[in-house]
Image 1 (tube, one colour):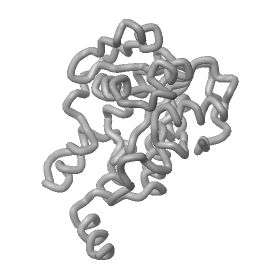
Image 2: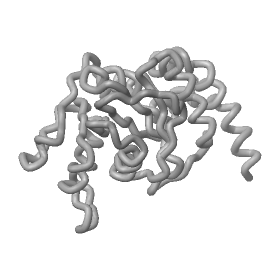
Image 3: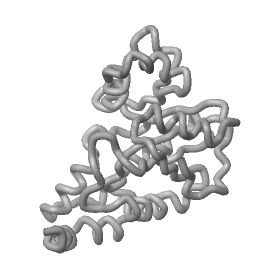
Length: 211
């Protein structure tokens, strides 16, 4: 793992917010801001490779640029670039990089937490073992998350002031493609970048070049 801004001081409690950020939305930013009530710092984790998908349309380096513009005015935010794309890999990479950090959380919504807990992990690395290395910090998304009793000591519920249930990167992309309003779904500092990257004319020209 690499920290894109290595001068960043992580503090005692850190949350990793993993994502493809295709593009970042106000839900990503709002989730990170809400997490600051529980942790010292939040790192937007952009993996160099994903286990089940690839970087399409907008390449890794460009997504990193968008994130850098997003967090520029937020001193308690940084960007992590994990080598592994699995949540446990990210947490363990960060622990190896910053062993002095007391608490490491993976920040996610209810839907992601359910997938993480229910995933068919190898017998040698069950979720119970993984949660010895990190905790989950879970925000409501289409309802509150109720963890299994055996795991509840390692899963923290995150109160959120806003409802982001209907906000997603997919919705932003579809709105731009359909020439529908989308700016209210994306943080203002990256409006121009997002428009330039996801406009129909830009994507059409990219598709023509790839043929």
